Image (cartoon, rainbow, N blue to C red; front, side, top):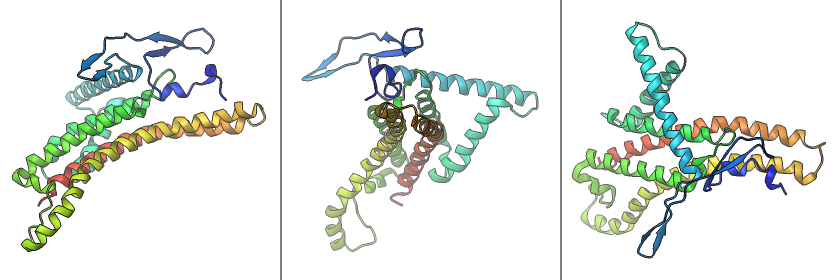
Length: 282
């Protein structure tokens, strides 16, 4: 069993009312207690609104996202005014934005999909920064919290449904109630009560898949690293230490790729779902 002082992995995926920062004490970490607020009582329910470590990580992710993109935009504008191509970070951000716009959002959302580009780009960069913050020392993976991923999925769900309403108008009801227009009335009356629940369920399986996929992938890597490092303490031998250590190092490097991949997949699937509902009842 890994001693509490040696556990450097679990704090990256668990939420708490304190954050860690580097210091010279044993374990090279100290704890800063976050403020505690009075809970809100709504009927029989009690809601704790006190900030937690994951809330801090989300605020940091949003701050870093805004600062990075604004600096890249300023650099791009400055180079454009000088008649030069953007360099460094601005060049990388421009390449990512153009790729997501041209190859992910517009082909999947369909005609007049430009209005959804800012939303999908915001999702991608916010999730990316949140994922990467969980890989640095003293950081925490907020996207390893099912409440966070469920909220992101709920935001995407609302945007998808709004996109369907705007594109389909009155035909939006056909994405809820199954009504095969090309079938006889008898078939319609027979199929509608059978397939309407499936149509309705399919609306909620999409955000559910978004939430679980991001949560599971961002949590799994840390758990595998913890299991590999735990082998060293379980066997209590330095002779086997190199193999679990190298395995954990490989998983950590893979997690950097996973951080980018999961942000991309979330943005891609959101674009696909928007495109599907816009064409769903045509």
